[in-house]
Structures are given as C-alpha cells and as structure tokens.
Image 1 (cartoon, rainbow, N blue to C red):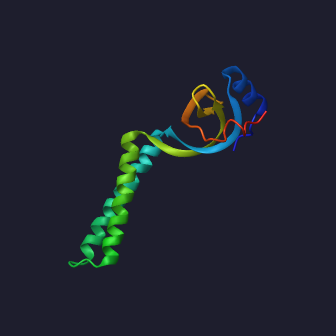
Image 2: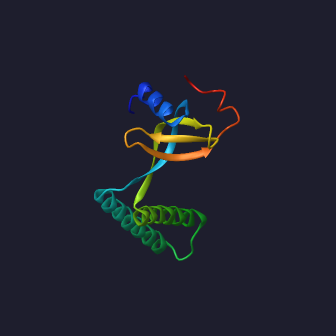
Image 3: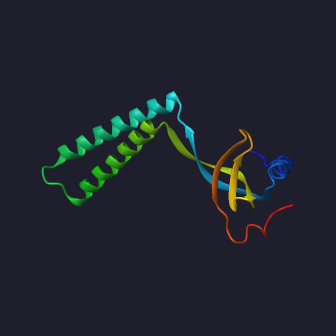
Length: 131
C-alpha cells in the first residue's frame, strides 16, 4: 500500500476548494494485461473441460454435480466477461474530499490526478472535514 501524502492531499483540497475527509478503500477498474488475458483464457478452458467431465460422469445428475457444474459456469462467465470488458476490479485506498459546491464525496487518484468517483455526500461530511 502506498503511503498517504498529507501535504499533497491538502494542496489538492485547497486548489479545488474541497475539504479533505481522509483516505478510504474504493473499488476501481484497471486495464488487464496481455498476460492476464491469456490466463483468463486458460481459466475458461479449464472450466469448460471440468463441466464436460462432470456431465460425462453420470446420466442422472444429482444436486452435488449440478452445483459443481454451476460453479464452473460462473467461473467461465466471469473470465469471459473480464476478457470482454478488458478491465478488472481492484480495491485501492484513495483520498476522499468533500466538494461543497457539488455536495458530493470526490475520490481522487493522486498518482494520475484523475477523479475516480463521485458519490453523494453524507450528512456529516461537512462537519467531519480534516484540516
């Protein structure tokens, strides 16, 4: 985890007219690499193979086999969707600011300078600002 740079957060808050609320974990989407695409393809192939293997075990499926098949289908679909979208979700701890003009919480990635997300402000946000 990266060290929080309080001075940088204070500068950002001052330059935008925001109040600094602290740092909080937030889920962000990041691009997947070529290696990750290959790994996801392998995961999909293994899941398909496992499904076919389970289906060939018995002509009459019991609840346990159905559950295993459904689990493999979920794994396969998740890998396929991640590959299709081209991003994956990761949790980052980002500084959060209160924007009084927009009455919202602003999460900013200080490394890129990008506003990652805006959320409606909580009623106590204006009172809990950090100097």
